[in-house]
Length: 83
Image (cartoon, rainbow, N blue to C red):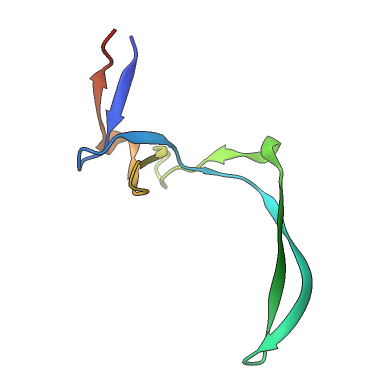
């Protein structure tokens, strides 16, 4: 059986909230208010093998709905897919 998952507000859950280690390339540094500020090139190298799904402190995974809001998996409801 396959299910769709919905947030407490009724919005479809589109995926898990994952983090991916990466390096955002910098071409130079400037100083603003006595702090170093990076000038990004726009390129980011992602290390996909290090990707992980974020979870709450108690281990429940976090999911994200179509509006960009994050929820705990145990806050969501499922509905069986038709067909």
